[in-house]
Amino acid sequence: MLITTISKIKETVSGWKMQGAKIGIVPTMGALHAGHASLIKKAVEICDKVIVSVFVNPIQFGPSEDYDKYPRTLDDDVRLAEGLGADVVFAPSPEEMYGKGQRLSNDNLTYVAPPFFYVDKLCGKTRTGHFDGVCTVVLKLFNITRADYGFFGQKDAQQFIILKKMVNDLNVPIELISCPIIREESGLALSSRNKYLDEQGKKSALALSQILNNIKNCYAKGVTDVAALKETAFRFLNESHELEYLEFVDKNTLEYKTKADNDTLVLIACKVKSVRLIDNTLIAC
Ligand code: PAF
Image 1 (tube, protein in one colour):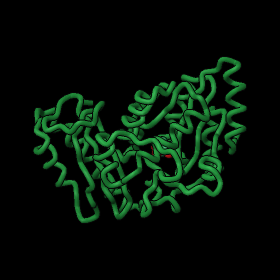
Image 2 (cartoon, rainbow, N blue to C red; image 1 turned 135 degrees about the horizontal axis):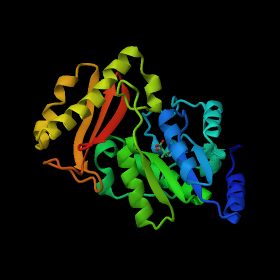
Image 3 (cartoon, rainbow, N blue to C red; image 1 turned 90 degrees about the vertical axis):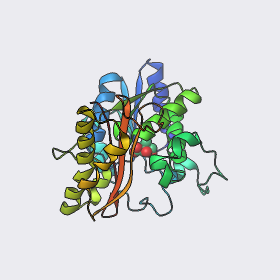
Image 4 (cartoon, rainbow, N blue to C red; image 1 turned 30 degrees about the horizontal axis):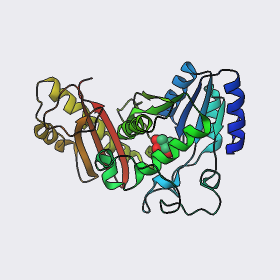
């Protein structure tokens, strides 16, 4: 069932709550792919009722980012989500989420501001305000749906750590579940933005997973010095790549590491022919 209004989803949720149902939410921006499918399957496995939200959230995009051209495929998304057993696709308009005629900025609307330590690095460094926008919309979705479980992809590792911090700091009554990255056979991590890549771009994009695999192999052979591990990345890069960051952080706290250990998360962001891609891995897995 497709629901587009907050009043209708609240009414539906109230009915479910009365039956004592455990509710799961899979927040997405649509253009659903096998990565999202794995989240929906997990949610269906654990919960009695599953909501997939599809909302391209304007307040998490910077002025020069791809909000307008972000792929929108609602009919396909509804088919896929329902086919996997989701009960509801909640797809509100921006006006429904933020109010008609509202100026979408934090001098007009209440935003959630995650701690500077968590946002002033990795994707937050170049995407100013991005995680404020993510936390704000996700908290709104949690409040609207009163879900017991929220499902997110490990691909957006910094996002997941920040959302967990928000849930903990603001006592939001929900359990967050992170699901593994789904990859093409080639190793390329699935992303809605892969749609922007042509064949050559897809080939170049393999550098991200190759760099991460190579770092894992070097670590397995005993290299722990982060500077030395970073050096090994360069042979995978050429003029089609614009490396934004390659960082080594603690998997729970996002603290930078100079020596890698088994709790180290390696994250990469790289533009491939102007398409911004991200990937990550635990160094010891
Ligand atoms: O990861 C995403 O697709 C988005 O950031 C999310 C969590 C749906 C919030 O808009």
